[in-house]
Length: 172
Length: 337
Image (cartoon, rainbow over the protein chains, first blue to last red):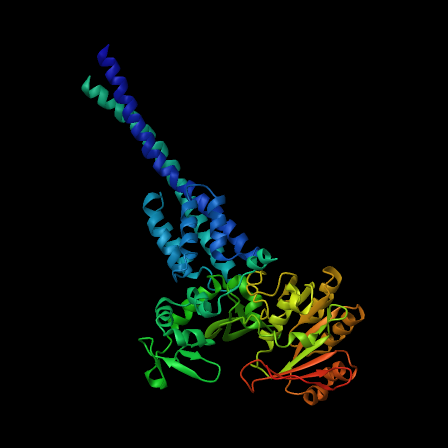
């Protein structure tokens, strides 16, 4: 009886491990989608509202999902600190802090970095182009990430449970 | 009354230069901060041109700054502004929001917090023959704005009609850089807040500030003290602005800077017909000078105004050289102030 309880616990534990691993894979497409929405909001603020960048970023940061909000919020804070930083520097700094805690991959970071280099330094039309480019790239990454996630989520959740079962069989 | 006065933003003349520090790149900021107080108090403009020396402008002269931030006379010893400095300066001035400032760039200047102005040059981007915006920014002139409360106090008694507690239609005439705008700002402030000593209650003033020079509006809010009863239309063309104020704000006095175009004078006529007092300025050095210009001639010869004030700098910036009665063209006896 005790053995059976132990076996159940092993299966449950390894199954949970599998689900957690799978969750990691589904986090990235989610974050990418939020990022894209956030950039869309930024575009609206910048292009149609002609809002100052610091203010626009603060607005985006407060309105979008918690998963990406801090990125914009911190950049806004840096920009309005009057310490003589440019938008690119503020964005870079915020990105460096945000990246390790996110599920993003280096290629996603690169897209955001490239966007930062052109934030706020040109006229409206140019800003639209840069924002659209970044959004388009993020969309492509999202598609790839979703495919990857679909594969891996299944794989890891099966692997967790089956691995648990195998362990039980070996130990039994 | 006192309480209301306090709520009006007043930039302290001595510390005016500190207002513009946040828009300067860090090392230039340090140079300015470490200047002796005597220089900081007097500096009128900071000229930053890419690849050329950093210049501080004063009323009559200018000096260069060397890399250590010391004032020097020779250009060869001066700190040369780099492309990086320029780029950073523009980013800081615009709050990293060039896209939001297209209208301002078209006019060539941006108003900074505190009412200071940054003039900007670069390459103009044209669209159908008119300037759409600027790019490749190469030069910047930060003009430090110092309001001088009381600059017009000596002048005020001549502009007030004591019998009906009102002001006269007035035109201030002066060559550039003689304190025309400063005087106008102070006249507006005094009329708007009222002058108990002269028996003038505060009057509602409508101010058309086409070039954001008088009230120094930042995001539409006056940064300089233009009085408690003043409505400011910021960045609005004068002729249109005067009509808008006339229709919407029922002012007792309408003030505008640098009248010069035909439509301005037409709008002025409307204002006069509506029984609203006008307070305007014009470029020129004498009455004869003004009477020769086709547009301005109308104001003088049709006796549209009651008081013509000629400014000069014979005793420093903002000297009132002459006050002329607009109806009889007799000079009123004044001691220069």
